Amino acid sequence: MTTASQFHVGDRVRTTQPLAGLPLGSIGTIGKVFPVDEFYGVRFVGELLPRLVHCSALEPVSTVRRAREVGGS
Image (cartoon, rainbow, N blue to C red; front, top):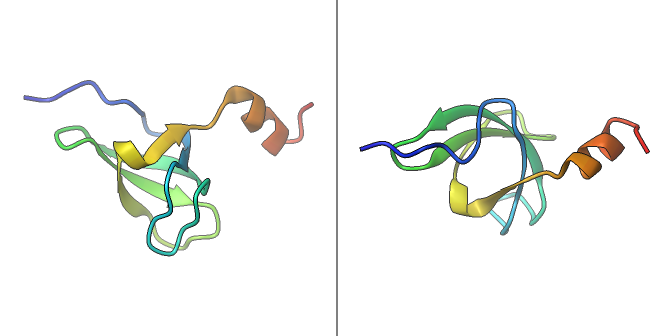
């Protein structure tokens, strides 16, 4: 049985807990969705390869923060 994915390819996310080699709040982009076990392939800023991360360790980046990252007000 599959469940609806919490995130979709292209969504910006941040970590809610430190992960091996990544501090809390690391920003990344969903590149692949594995909906059966709620895992995501995430490419983090400054990292060469994507990481496999469970949804419990991720939260969406707010649209306000996203606007600031791209130079908005």
